[in-house]
Length: 326
Image (spheres, one colour):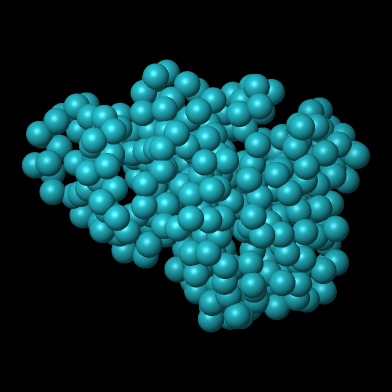
């Protein structure tokens, strides 16, 4: 089968299109053999793949390996007793191997693809939307009627967070860097949009502040995020796409009884298989209500995987970057 492989840690330019054997029905997250074999139609591309191409991600497989954590496609085979059967449309978080014609995925991270979504939207569903729900509800304790501020609001995680927050009854504020990204953020449900290179902190304060700030960006904006929160507000840290890991002066937390919360979705849910089904059930409700409709930006063929990673690495992505495989 065709696959994109990382054989040297030189960044996105080091990706190669190769021919490799199809995967067996095994997966390190499913030692009991509950593995689904999926014929891939679309694969999601995310910041972790950029880091993996340089050996900078916490998951460091032996070289060479096939990157790609999330897929949408058709079931070829499933274990006995599975909710899935050959021919079913599914989405899955396979962790590795998605940039290929076929992938083996753990059954507990594989879900039916709703008919309201196409395969490109399906490839944008699990990582971003499960992260969004986990960040807002499990870690952020979001309540209906609260205000959520989202940094990096035009990216995959950002647009997912806006949609989930709106679906749960929140008011939403987006922070973006340009006009094109503002348009995407508004399409994802942002009630108000401010520019990251402007006086967004003052504008947010004038607009009534936020109960929750969701930050997948990091860098130098953490202090202003804390200043943008209401009393008992929560700053939820999702990642550091800006590259630098910020530090917090904890005396700032005392002023308004603020909380800084980490949202490490993957590490948390992998040891709690049932939780993944519960979160997907809540997301399915938001799909049914029309609130969740993944916004897909660039769609590139498998052989242009290097370009897909470069788009994310250059912070040019709007919505989800997807590789069309079939």
